[in-house]
Image (tube, rainbow, N blue to C red):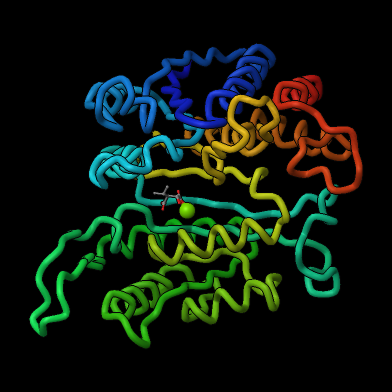
Length: 358
Ligand code: IPM
Ligand code: MG
């Protein structure tokens, strides 16, 4: 089969890590008889430099006509002074919205070989950590109206961001979470702030109703502040966490750090169609950009998620994941995951080690 992949290398370390991931896909394609055709497009800071805006219609159209999108990272201090409507991050939000990518799947799992990097005591972590944060991605305060107005009581100007959720939006993300839980440990924790927020009260009611369609899955509810605490107190109690856009943004960063290595974690953003956008959880790391030392593993694992979720190629995805695991078990480390005095590999050396295992 032939698959069209729109590639957004983006800013900072984006080009370095995406290059390694593309080489991995090419090798997997050759091994299994698939052709991956890449079309590179600009988004984020590099698009601001060339086009004056972070996301052009041309980029959106090419991503829409592709079978999937692979993204490195966008943003950096160079564009910090750009007005808010044109910041590089707007490219991400614009792509999520225009491609209808309402579900953001962020697995956080601990690799045995990297257990020493976990910041939580071994007695608490037990024999590992493997959860998925299923974050709603196209609603909430992220996509409400953002505006300023004069306060009524003479306190000066006010910044306002409308937070809203509709039943439909909550139902569709809840179903994704329950379906995911069915093929895992059959447990969903829905996280909200329904002791304060009306959006959260609607969220909780709706998730509870959708749960009736999945009697084989256990549903629990948690307030977001408690969830943040429980994640470090007893992370093993979670399997699938389903939550809104803002809470999911925060909790997925927290969950990723429990694995000890944000440089390891992939993510998938998916919608109603097979097309998804796949990217590492970490950002553009401008401080190390261009040095060839970034860890390409999160981007390589994002390709595995693409093969599994968008193309239904689970053997191919397994092959990539095993190749990564073997490289780690063999002691290969980039700087961010070398905590035991191991020899440090460059971005391309790590890519090469992984490709040797394919
Ligand atoms: C993420 C990022 C983005 C978000 C930013 C860069 C807009 O933090 O993908 O988690 O908040 O969604
Ligand atoms: Mg985030």
